[in-house]
Image (cartoon, rainbow, N blue to C red; front, side):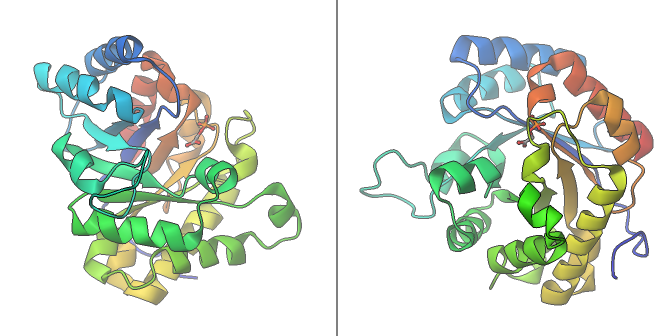
Length: 266
Ligand code: PGA
């Protein structure tokens, strides 16, 4: 296997907060002010990203720029067309104008509730990269898939289909988050060994489809009930480059603690 620490490339870790459908504008201003205040640390060594709902992007941007914060902004979804009759959708250029550096695609909630397929994820990834926004592509298995011992095949397929036809250079600057569905919002995180195995496998699939250089550079995150108490166990794993955080990202102190842990250990 390619991963498992055999590849020693220093990658800048990422702690990304996925706020999901939480926080009105007023609440988002409040939370981002607290996060900006708490996360006042050595910035070259880590990337911190917050992904609020679309309706909060502008006000969170205002808070971060007022504070001269290095925290980056991300969106939670995008549509692949640039403009037109697509009621309810948001384009890459709209995100870019709001200074989004990142955008989550293929989150299991979008796949499960809104019918997002690997093909749609692939189109979104290509549109984002063409528009200069880095995708954070989510993959992860259900409990049934894990119990059937099909996890690595399943996530390998999601990765292959999601990144089909994407340049190695673009893949290298992107992010993949391994998020087992059974660990999201359940308080039941994967074990560090399970997460490392999956993240190493993702890296090995990237090596296969885009070459070793891209595999060395792409950041692979773990997500699923990560919090300060268990982050200390995930961060030392060689193929885990940080976390995609849901619940704990809504608590500024917990989120800042996660950033500190990643900084200290990675
Ligand atoms: P969680 O969510 O940290 O609340 O489990 C993670 C995610 O869905 O990205």
